[in-house]
Length: 286
Image 1 (cartoon, helix red, strand yellow):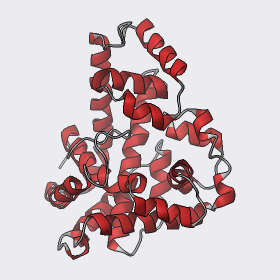
Image 2 (cartoon, one colour):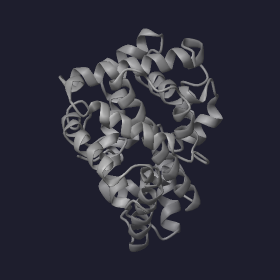
Image 3 (spheres, helix red, strand yellow):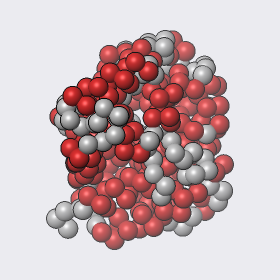
């Protein structure tokens, strides 16, 4: 196998994303991070996602998260590391993810393909070139859990952040800041009502971002996409898929098929269900 189609990478992202997202949307995950002192949803979110990087401050987290308002993240950072260390946070996020998967996927531990699917994920992650992928690399550097359900979540998370790092690189290359990227997406799918409460940007900042995009010819003054804006949206998604495809070269088409076959019913049970739809992370229906 010499290449993996971008469509394959996109399909696998759609199936892996719900496994990762239980960390954000389930009561089991929230209970786990609150047990270690991370009170409140957003403190838990910021700490659990940033913990693989170590006890970092506001600036690097703002850079790698990319599309959150810095003032919004400043409500959590660096305070969260006084509540729970990164090591405590990593343990809590794994325990919460496992509890959530067990609650929403009864019998998943007995699935005969679980071990084989984890083996495929492990091989893929082990072969990735992590240069330029800070969040993905930080997760990849963590030990693989012995528990197969924790390992499933870990593999899904690592590849999800690999894709996200690539997406951020493309946005930056196209001269789009985080809020402009939100505004461009919202003009296409009407997602602003879902995104706005969860990323911390003020209304006047949205207005300014829309005006900047209009000045570039990407949005109409009404906020609708222009043909150029629609073309850029397609380009961003296509390039994200293309850059996300490289890790899957590590395994055969048959192994990718096994992984997709195992994940598809799981993803469909998780979203909608454990994970709302629509959602701020942009996870589509499987």
